Image (tube, rainbow, N blue to C red; front, side, top):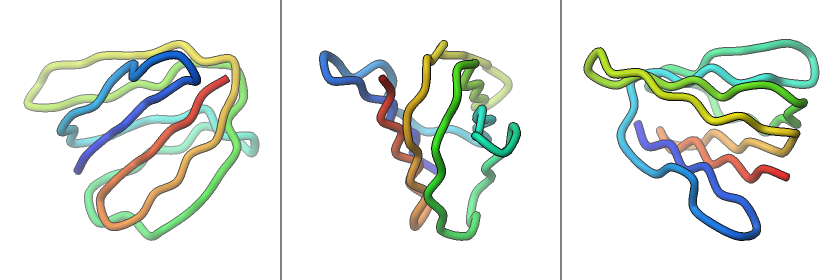
Length: 77
């Protein structure tokens, strides 16, 4: 699955991941490969991702996420 994290100024992360945990407005949630399509707002917190045992994270103040066809697109504030 591909994760794209972008802001108005820059691409913060783009790459292959196995899982992504996001700070949703209704609570944190995890996206795995073949997840159902969804759109959600994000609140301040951390986006955590993992791929082949490697982990990373991006702090966010809020934003929106779109999950569709194994692409997780995050636009942050």
